[in-house]
Length: 257
Image 1 (cartoon, rainbow, N blue to C red):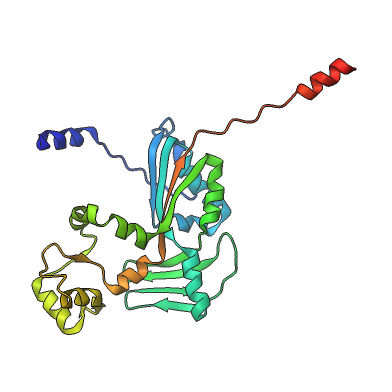
Image 2 (spheres, rainbow, N blue to C red; image 1 turned 90 degrees about the horizontal axis):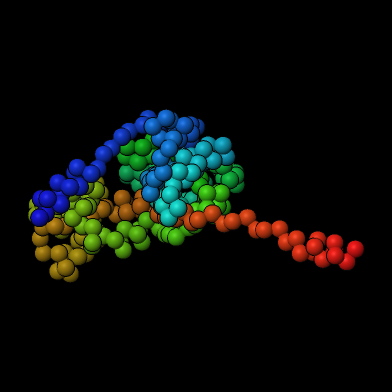
């Protein structure tokens, strides 16, 4: 039964790729895409790049939401600009860093679009990025009848959904797995490869972890990066009809005259 179910899924799913800059091009102008309506759109760790300018942000949101079915969803993960600014205002502008990431912001211009900072993550990311404000995003998406149904820190979302998705996490290799030898190293120094795993050491000492089997985790430094992001979910509502013009006053006026 399981094989038959998997076989049906494999046969029913297709995938097509369209190369495009979603912040400068209307992807729905492509002939193959023009008539399509979709149930969900997703933009992970990328939407804020479009907030370099008002024009780019508008184009990106048009691509994300204009062809959503009523009841469809727009989901994503973006930097929490309020959290980033909170750190800088507390410690002074310049840079926030650890041994795996660096956020550098020399000045805050208090602009809705184009307020820039530089983000570096290990050897994966090293580029300019832009502040994005959720209240602004929420307001701009009203044009497409999008309603916010979730906005929360990525840390909260991760912890709430971790247990029921632990197998998927392991399959995707999105978290570190451990050997018994590595657990022994953590007991000695609370770290592996220069990354801090003191939270695992604490669980080992308290007897909550017995072996490396099925153990998945982030380092303290990686968790620190996660804290700078938030999850959003918008749902497309039916359009609100334009109010009818009340002509009763005109009719009354005509009768009286």
